[in-house]
Length: 484
Image (tube, rainbow, N blue to C red; front, side):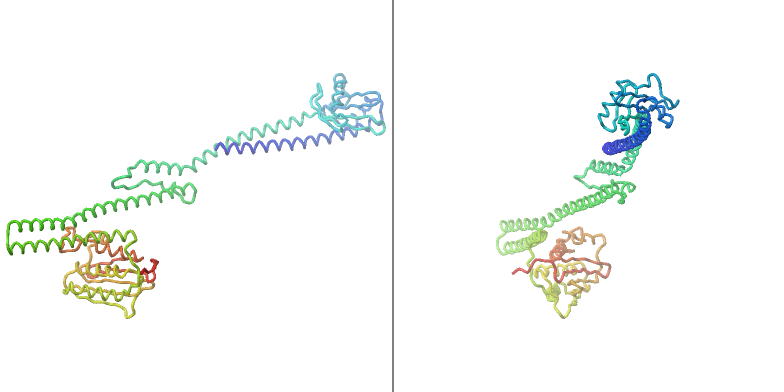
């Protein structure tokens, strides 16, 4: 605000100086014109009475209406003399109105042979004088008028300008202060909101940012309101990010707990059967001991394989997250579906299996082994979570630029409470994690990671009697070139 007032003040001062200079020059020009007119008339009188200034002045005064303070001076061979006319009585002034030699010398020195000059005369003040030459007598005729009126007008003008400037600056200061205060009100609301958010504890626990800039202060149609609207958008993004972070933390804690549970079970089995084998060997001899040891070793091997598969699945997910593990080549989804269904059919003879594939092959760029794993996981998921007699249909088709693979079943459907977390790691509808009702909960997570690694997407739609998993893979995805 100070800068604005200072800049406006400078402009007003410049305007005042320019106005005063122009007005002063105009008034000086008008004054010179008057003096020149008087000089012409006085020259006429002097030509008639060259030797008597008093007579010439009387004639001049009688034929003109001189302004107050008009001075008349004549310089010829006889000397120089001058008087001040009194227009009120229209006659020659007497006494002090006669110009002294000193005053005449001041006028002569100011003119210094020039046609006009401004001179300060003792006892009279500032005068504007003009010199002319009488052509018949050669006498120098000087006339002059006081500059008091010009100075008074300039003083009045400057006084008015100063007062108007001060009043305008005061009004400008008040208007600017009010305008700035109103305009910056949204910024104060933004600062207050930012301060309240900064005072919240955001580094741990469940965090929710509820502070927002009021809607009245976040009008995007104004610059300052746009700042408030942008801050609200930022806080919405941060709030959703913090919620996602909290959700990821909870999922990670659950992941660690589930992984620990999955690994603890086979480890406990291995330890138990190992102790049983050692006890049988130490306490028994003969075929019974050998049979018991063989059984324990078989169980140990089974649990070791189970733990190995779990670790391999976790390693696969980690590598897929890093964008590794996939080896690209041409994949015939039609052939892949036929092979996948042939592998799945013997594992559930109590289910009804069907396939729907086109006559022409549908080829995509991808990793054949991993895509086969996707098909196997989806079929295993449908087989495991549906009762006997359920019909499972595997179909392949092309829709636009996508190759679409669907696994459909007419089973009981998916519980809506777990549908959103279905593709999460260790996600299972059975929270007891019993082996009879499902695997480790990594099958669908692996399928999702593989599909997304191919630039595709996997979705599910489910209701009682109608559950469909849909995989879409671009026929020509933006994937790396095929590797040998």
